[in-house]
Amino acid sequence: MAENKLDLAYLEKLCNAFGPSGHEREVQKMVLNYGKPLADEVLFDKTGSVIFKRGTLGPKIMLAGHADEIGYLVQSIEKNGFLKISNLGGIFPGNLIGHEILIRPFKGGDKIIGITTNGSLAGPHKDKIPKLGDLFVDIGCATDEEVKELGIRVGDPAVPYAIYRSLTRKRKEKKKDAKPDEEPEIKEARLAVAKAFDDRIGVFMALEVMRRLSEENISHPNIVYAASTTQEEVGCRGARTAAQLIQPDIGFSLDVTICGGGPGAKSIEQKMGKGVAVGVYDSSMIANPVFRRFVMELAEEKGIPCQTGFLNRGGTDAGQIHLSGIGAPSLFFGIPSRYVHSHHAMLDLDDVEGAIQLLIELIKKLDEKTVASFTTL
Image (cartoon, rainbow, N blue to C red; front, side, top):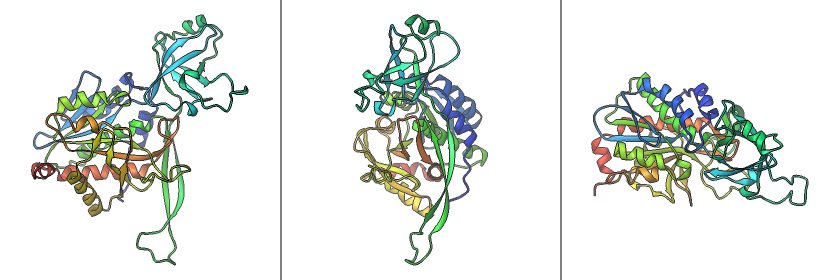
């Protein structure tokens, strides 16, 4: 793989930003400031999506990453000063006990940290896997009046409280064509952990593509639209409105995906560190087989690691994009990640770099004739 050129300082800021579904404004301001100088035009839909356009002629290529992360809403304020919360997106309550969440109060400027608990860490139900409705949030208050004095109201949003960090590990790997007695190579794996890779990593990838197209003055026979969409975690809503605005000819959903290689995940094919996973199927879309073959063959030709992705359930923004207009062949590009929808998701940054390089190679190739070949008989 070519040199890794990721703007990791920006990725860190993007992941640490506050932006649960329906409350993406802080993130989208950051995205707008970063992407505006790279685009010929900036477009907006009415759900809060930000779209960067580059180019004037040829098929319309949509790259979509969603700005929202999983989060919570304050559902009620108890008399004893504890809070009850509801979910924004898929939450696994068993991952929450003893963790911190960050609440943005309706009144007041400072965000407030709370600790999630089932109230029985040492009691008879301590080993029980809770439901979200069983949990409370402790913000250190003793009465509901104290809570209200902090500015917190029912409906206030919250997100997992965790910060981005990176780490490197030495790995021994054998080449595909290595002889049985040949020693494995030592590879340095560059990993990162963050609370909001789902899906700031997709937004980041779309922006990185735009940055390199701009800075390297890369010619392409199409119009590229990099969209930072909203409310994916609650129904891919921003992708639907953004795609209606763009009316793309080709779509890519850029996101994370589940991965195998860890305890209890032996049946999952896609692995962290083995390249971007190009989706075959999920609950929202069956990938166009001609388009997908084109992508996989190009990755092989360019020596870019790539693997097959498969989801038995769930969907991505591609599920909405491929139904826009009269239809747009679309693919899901997933970065295999451990512990998605938790405070600490983990991924391999080389998978991210490879996905960006593959997208750029595709953008160079996707002219009108090639795009038409995916749907003509």
